[in-house]
Image 1 (cartoon, rainbow, N blue to C red):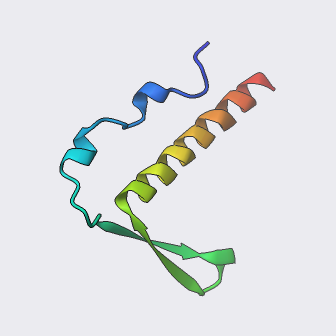
Image 2: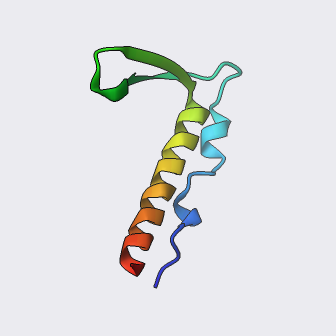
Amino acid sequence: EEPPFDTDKLDDSDSRNSHQSKEETSTNMTVIENGTKDISTYSLTETEFNELRDIYKRLGALLKSIEKSS
């Protein structure tokens, strides 16, 4: 049985920070809320985007482990 969170796969390496300039590149994320045509665009820094992506990966792993145990 493997742990729900595989922290080794998270990218905390220094490679990301080494080429990072003072002004981070931003990633635009478009969100369509409630299936309507109202579209909100949020501007995220690369770090924020990666943190959100990691959170989603962890949530996915957590959900899978919960489904297995039930």
